[in-house]
Image (cartoon, rainbow, N blue to C red; front, side, top):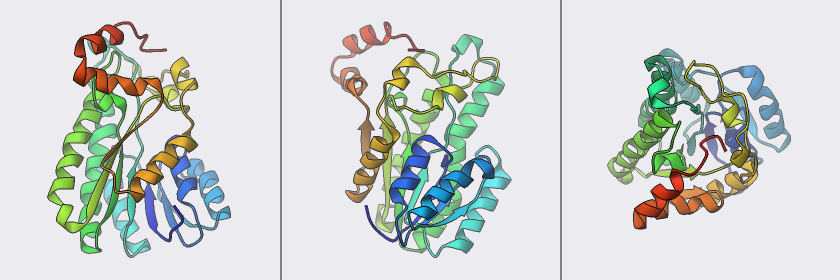
Length: 264
């Protein structure tokens, strides 16, 4: 999509967030990159600038209220409007419900749901005032059904659907479009940082993820969906059958789900 737009991407330091930044980095575009650390965002910023985009870096933590507020306020001083807000940042999970303490559960929910809801709520009045835009929300196939060792991750993704589908309906008249993106297995380092029951990180790439679609493929699918004002897309390979099985053949869905290794 070659255009001159103002785009804000969270989770932009790697994976799908970085791929989206590079997909949308064209001459005339202004890309705002957000993530936890400035040092992790700088290489992405350099790549975007080499493609002709103007780039700003705003690091912040999705679990910190004051940092979210500061970031939203700063963005409004940098651009006249936001054409695309891409809520990509997040954290995974690899732990059973019975083993997971409240502190770990809350961190996942605060990052994967509250952070995006909070950020969007703070920037939404600005988007409405300046004529609307598209909000891209990184959900997951796990936002469409439950899966072992993903309890709070699934809960957060389910919550995103409820919140942002409501937002879409409430602000349709304000020209706010919401695209829910539900990836299956994508070849990223996401599983490395997934939280275990101890609060530590999983530290390895799941086998299925290693064989997933590329982040570039995912970014192109999102780009096309934004240009067509789509409301939801699924991205992946054969795992995309699972939501349809859950709806039309639930007995088969559960038969398969019980036989999938959650770390595969």
